Length: 344
Image 1: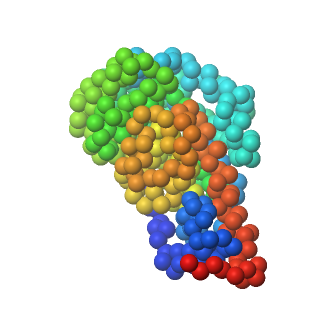
Image 2: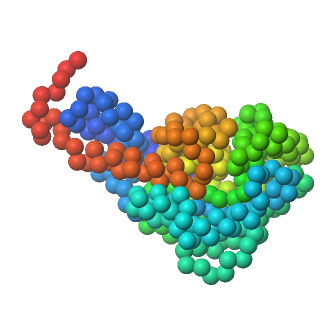
Image 3: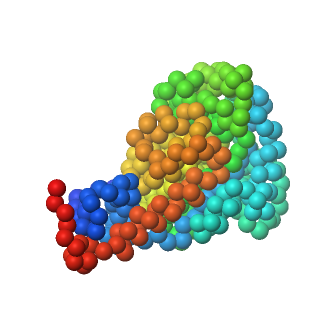
């Protein structure tokens, strides 16, 4: 399986130029906080001082999970395809937020257990009608997992813009994400499993037991690709491939919540330099996301108590990317404004 090589963003000369440009704006040093570090990160990703945000897109990958047969979700599996229909009808939260931020929204059927037929606005990359039940057997074969990675890479290769946000929809996918988190970080299962779509305390405990039994059953899965094939979803695997390709192409990766971060976790275990391309939109209210972010050394931009998925956090964080680029490109310097810089 070909895994893209991620170019490093490390460039001491450019970093110094960006620091100087940021610090010479008409403001006290550091007074724009996170926007300053974000501007520098974007400059290093784009390998230039002339920052730009062009044609941002959010990719929402949808797929079903066989593990729902274990009673790990508060919603039936049919909700996956019903929500895809809602996306296509422009009735979901992500539709509202993407429109509000002038962001292209791409909805991808990675493996939904439903026949949509040809539909405007739906990108059909279905590899199977969902995964198998990983409580009983691996979620997918290694070949299917690799095909999902390749499909994600191909999707991103077709995008014109330089910002890619990632979202998802799939009943049961917090269970898959929790299993991936445990296997790839070693964090205890009980700290990885949360309420997902709204499980009761009893439901969360059942979900925990399902994941514990599954990871014990598939203990031989250790390498990132094997872990992904054993416990992941088709939407998670396709996202992983898309992320790897986006970083190879030096695009900015906007990372949404718990499930999207689990896909990144797999990608980062394959290519650690991918993390330099990631802007973490928010910290989800889903139990375990904060610890997953910590395991990646990530600092999210927002903390709004979100746990919807769909890429909603990406859309809400996108204006901050614009703000960081615009202040660096448009704000006056002390010299150009003929303002005396205050010395401490």
